[in-house]
Length: 171
Length: 351
Image (cartoon, rainbow over all chains, first blue to last red; front, side, top):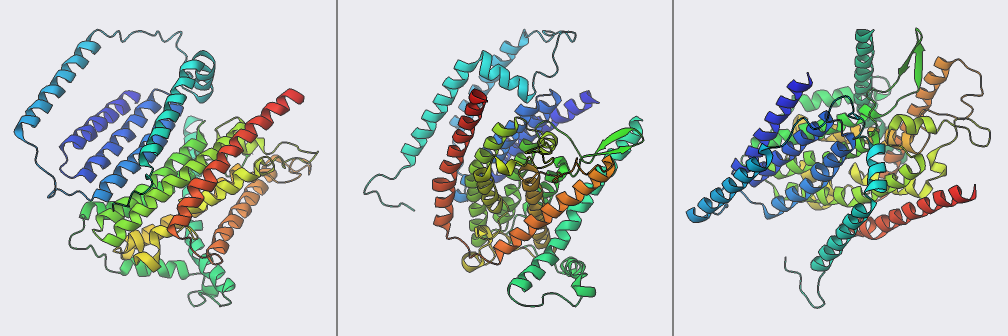
């Protein structure tokens, strides 16, 4: 049952991810990307990581992708207005992507998939309470540093978006 | 035993779904009656006794109208928009506990469709997803007014989600759990010797105020109905929609109102708990059924409140909306989180 779910979700993930790249219309690309994140949320639930699933759902599907869609709708890009890229950049992109693919395969080739034995594995490790305890007890310093980083990024975004004195509205 | 348990769960899910749709249907009737009452009119009174068959007549009318698709609209997304709006609206009532436990044949049965230990986050996520229906429909119409409505909906939802999330964080500091069932059960504890009165509104009055304002914005209701502002945008995101496409958008709004009312009643106003619930000495099942009735009374009050506000307040201007969201509600909600955390620490130190 769970195995079938896994294969279905994997199929959905790959199908949607390919759709993101192949679609001519940018809005379709964003919608496929939302579907990809939806399928990934399903994977998290299969791994019994409910909190991670919910956060992925809220942050990526609910907030970040809305902003993506927002920007693309604002620019109102359509199939007919899309600029065609030169052949050279297409070839360069294909080579770069292919090299990344090879590196990924090389890195993942020797991964030991039998790291955990079912006897000692704690299936509740992905629950909110356990995750909170680990984050705020064992990994407190990295967690706090990450939040400082986020704060800096947020302040930077606000500074960039702020209108300078005397600057006219460009729209 | 396994099969009967599955059957009971299925029955509860069907009941929750049916009740959601039924209440949304009669909310359209109630809205007109409330509007009529506030404006000193009679309201719908032709179809059936007191006009009670009016929602049915509306649905029949919408079904038999022409389903018009504009020539340059994106056909697939034009249909997908309202469908998505309806789908996400119906998904969110799944985790709300509509009552305590019924004791049938020695088995405790929870009156809740699905229990997940991240119930609040589930609702929050599904509500966040609801904006896609509006955005896709507005964009696919290939109409400038629709597009403006869709973009307004997106920016409004993102702005108010932040404050809403912060007010929920303050609530979570008090309750210490993300599960809707546990939050509802906690509010049934005793306070000053009165059982069933330990409501979160006592601890989080500011949080509730922020939450209800954000709930109005998230459901696109007056005074935050800028996405369908007819004085500026013709009809907003559903300008090009007719027949059931329009019907689904309007209906999804009422389903959202019901869910928002149920969430507010559960999170802040005690859920299915009522004063003196354990001191009356009533049997377990009677208390549960009374609790469900009380919960629905609270939900109906909040639905009425939504309508009351709609026919009382004028609409915000768009810059006022953004100022309220970013410059007032978000700082206030962050302050609320800090004060709540400080109060919990102080309580742990002193008592």
